[in-house]
Image (cartoon, rainbow, N blue to C red; front, side, top):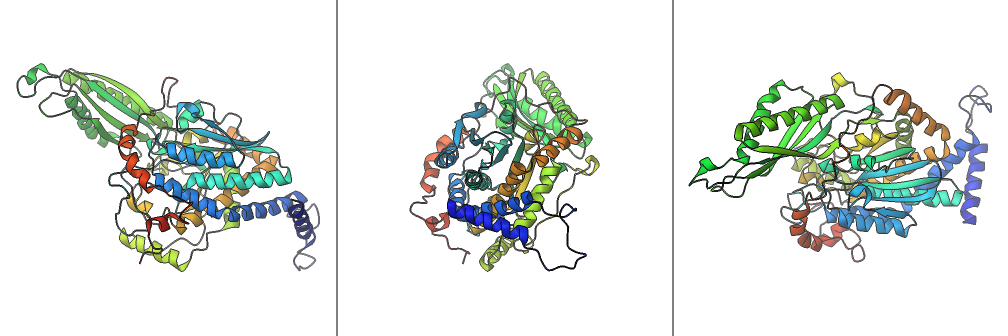
Length: 540
């Protein structure tokens, strides 16, 4: 510890006293704009220190990325992911609270004391039917029909944990006050976890949330984001059973009601705004053809770009469900399974994050990495551009008239509760289809490992900005109060009685988990998951 302290002191003295050769007109006098304070020089030194810590954690980072990939757990069933991540955090001195917000796979890790409180988070759940062997240039499921990481959510929490461990080490050495929290985005693909965290008060007292999401580029944005918010609603119709061949007139088909609702909604689409998105699956269509279905259910996502129009779609869905019940002589009930507000990100924190993105820069991709990326792009018939080598620009607000709709993320609810940003880090390949097995091919390879390390550096450096620059925290809240929420008040789309839908995917994983467990990564025996599976890199 003494050696490191001496090294840091010498570094700071050198940075303070050293200056490049410059003309008298170019030199800055102390106190003038552009002059670097001792605090700024110290912060620079600490950022370099935390980056070195993260470089020293690359093996752990790789093991976490590969392990979560091998678990492949879908929403609300992230039990192995929870066990693994919380064990690592406890090992490194974090206190862990479990079963957070009524979710058995919810947890919250904390270390430190006092203000500011910085919460690092990312999603953890996999996607149904995207099981895929990493590094293989064809559809090759680890387990046929199983979930997998076709969205790359196996990489985000490893990034946050890496950043948190490195931050803790630097904060302990340098006696920096503040609190670091780490939290998982449970069931994000179901849009069902973060609003429950908000309702449970997980972010009460938090000064800033640094969220991250896998991407093929390196970027961050501020203001209103593109995309939508949503409500996730399941309608269940109840009718009367009967022998479909012998006496069908005695029955009242719940499935008829589901089909009529679907037909009605599809006719109504023509008269909905272009920014809207809606889609559904029939979750229960009856038992067998010769029995009139006494119960049937349909599950809808209603998406729009602002709160009033999301509520309007929800109410329209309720109306159509009641009408379908009336037409079929059935009854209908509904339950809200999840929700998300449209996203809005904090300008001062985004600007600080972007400065750190520019500082860290893109990973140094090898020739093998580039060859692998182009092979995957060729597989999916995308442009063979390889991996990105330059960071993106700071994203700007999207005007409502320019927002054409799209996907949703329940980080939106968090962003309307506390100053929040989403760091998009380069751990996947450009041009891949979303929510697809092909998007899992790179997610346990050096591409993902390098991208997560780069992202962890940016997240940790931005946390240091918040810890050591009280004015940044103040500016973040000024923007939040005086700009973001000046004319918009957050009203949760979930109500007090809406509980987490923790039964989702339970039956599926009860059937598949025993087979999936055979493919869990064993870092004690194998350096990488590719090595365990006997897969060469790059593919031959």
